[in-house]
Image (cartoon, rainbow, N blue to C red):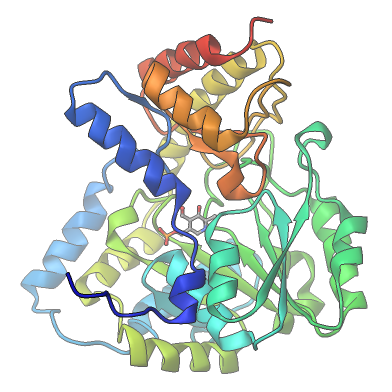
Length: 392
Ligand code: PLP
């Protein structure tokens, strides 16, 4: 066999996804007839609400099958700007919004547009696993700043400030957060704003993709609304995947300073052109429609999140920060357990339990479990997990 072509240094440096390795193994075991219980889902278990599907079908029937503007359907950009102004308290115009292929492409575009080689990206840890990889793809250096399960994953503001250097360019915040399900408080956001004010070169990206998936006891605050004076230094990432159960549609958006949006749209025009035109009509129906469907799905995750939380809290040795948003729990394993990758491999081989190693999110003592599965699956998964833990 001939030698494969050598890869670029960028591709060589890219970390293969640990989560994909686990789910590929889970699928292989299932095909072999093993009884697999998966709490590894990173997506809603609902179908997309009907009125959104219908709007997209109608767009197809109306012939909306051609290329569109790179920055997105003008009506959708207007609607997103209205939503951000009215719901999030961030006065926004359509020129400050672009539509992207999922929240993921919004982040990718932003990193490519803002970061130079050697720039540092401050990422509170645990973090969503794509941030460091995307920073590296932009030749920047990810700087994770840890927080711990023992402190409830509260932001360590002193450590964050200590991590800032003249090379620091971007601070990433994600609330409600994946994988911890933690929601940043108003006080934390205000303290972060103070910190950002002290460092004029620092920009902020707020990933708010789980904004609608919230426990009744907490409120979501957008960073740019908490610190209106910093609006020109704030970039907001959001999308339709989680709130409206539209993961496969690939619909997200980026908002921020119009000049950055223009540059990110130019990048998009040279890479993916535009987001699927008729899918954008579905997004328009979603964002302009009633939020009842979103609230009903959120209420269902809340009930299941409670079930998962209570089950984990009852396990001896587990340290859990009760999640109050998104659809994950991120317990720390008891003393004496192996690292998260080994633990998750054993969980899969021994108990047929698919969960995600916390090492992928920057904390090797934790594992991520999803509650976007049936109550029976949660109960079954908890029982399997309990059998893997040292006797308490
Ligand atoms: N941000 C966070 C924190 C996520 O968990 C995800 C997906 O899992 C995304 C962004 C990207 O979402 P999408 O590209 O599906 O819109």
